[in-house]
Length: 313
Ligand SMILES: Nc1ncnc2c1ncn2[C@@H]1O[C@H](COP(=O)(O)OP(=O)(O)OP(=O)(O)O)[C@@H](O)[C@H]1O
Image 1 (cartoon, helix red, strand yellow):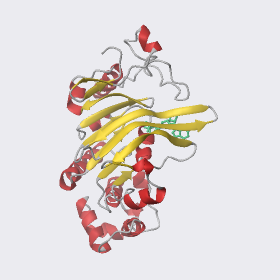
Image 2 (image 1 turned 30 degrees about the horizontal axis):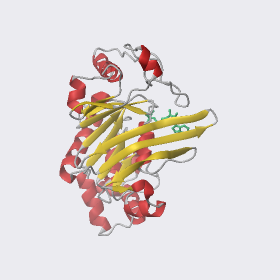
Image 3 (image 1 turned 60 degrees about the vertical axis):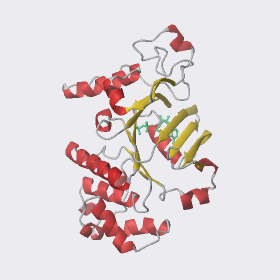
């Protein structure tokens, strides 16, 4: 049984300009000790999906349908109180975009980690746990007595990872955890997450628009576009042999960065409040056919664990 299983999840934002389908009928499975990468352009719904799993969608957004099972139990059926006591931070923790800047500047790192432990009723010795956490993320124990501004960006991100792990969660959701960091520091954070995955048998959902980065860490890949999953499967298989035209273009874009120029994907993502009636990628797809504009393709299984939503297959 997967540790996390999402079925037919839809999250909509009710805006004056219409209902934006930020997450549209998404299925996902995460197994124990596995890293899933979710990739897609900005605005494709990745963060909304992550916030949905943490039950942190706020007005004007709403989870309109679907189920999210943690170890077989539907967490969307729990009361807010029960979810907070049993799941949030204890079983599923999240590092947000820019979270390394999320420390309060006037409190020491150790005190901020302690506060999270207090709020979530950590059962054990706080001081030794904080030391253990700092060691785990390869920071010196003295960091507990430092203020956030005394640390580099990479160190702050490590400290935030330590805080996310304070209650020993089974799932860590990382939303663009390395975006603001230089490439070398990015690589070090990725190595740290790999180490933690192994040591703690942690399951990780790693969200980024950077496919090159994901190739370093993810076992499985989900390609998201305009709220929907276009392709999913084993990471290496997808890199070697992308099936969906959108995945192919995303992968070509990485190759082009190495050639010193960036080839974007021509065109724009459709308005999420006004998705096309057929395939959501049809207005940008180089292989578009008549049917693509009329009927939405299902996410179909091709072979093994490879699924593609495209009329070419
Ligand atoms: N608070 C909000 N109010 C209205 N619409 C929203 C809100 N938050 C998200 N959306 C809609 O959901 C879409 C998906 O946003 P989301 O942040 O999940 O994308 P993303 O793939 O994580 O992008 P990025 O990589 O830039 O963070 C947005 O394009 C927007 O249409």
